[in-house]
Length: 294
Image 1: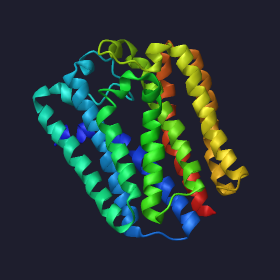
Image 2: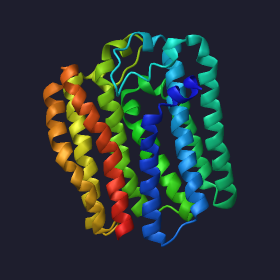
Image 3: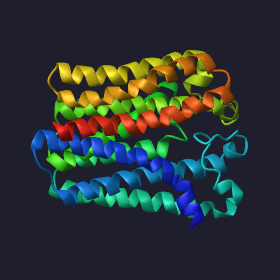
């Protein structure tokens, strides 16, 4: 059980909960009420998809030898579970398959009772899950954008769709918040892994253009997050209460400054990794609360 739970990285599964919560709140605001059973399935499907991503990442990073070379931090470098006993790798592979099948089964149910569009979203999600570690990590732009695409575009729009049967501009605006945040989450977590990642031919932006230039990308994406929240309200696509998401600027501004200052100093960067995780969790939840209040 240790190798099942550990490689799912349960502490990080809260991100899927935050993203689905944002979608659910947006659906309630636009449609008034939702099917509680469908909401529960959306949360389970999101958690299963995220767990599958984490498990396959752990499996492939150990098999490539990367996890043996990584200087692990609390927020990067994997869980460290599988390297304790690599003979348990088949358990982790089956964890990947079973959690992916749970997500697929839920997707099939929604395709039958809601509509076929969830099939397209689900297939795109599976492609991200099974190509991220082996292929997308070698394509700098795709490596940057695919995490946000998976959790923002696919998870938020997918959950919204199964709850409402449609996709609106409100949902699109909401999806851009985790799109930028989660892309930033993986970007910053790559900073401590640069030297190890080079040994397995990864080619993300901290390797390609350096940590200082990548820190500028981080700040730009963080700014885009808050600009999205403001523009959604200005164009009447989201309620004014979603400006609650701006409260995390209290943390985002000093975090941005610290990332720019400490891009090359990993020990000094660790507090920024912590704050970045909190930004990813709290901002969508605050925005979702805004939808519910409105």
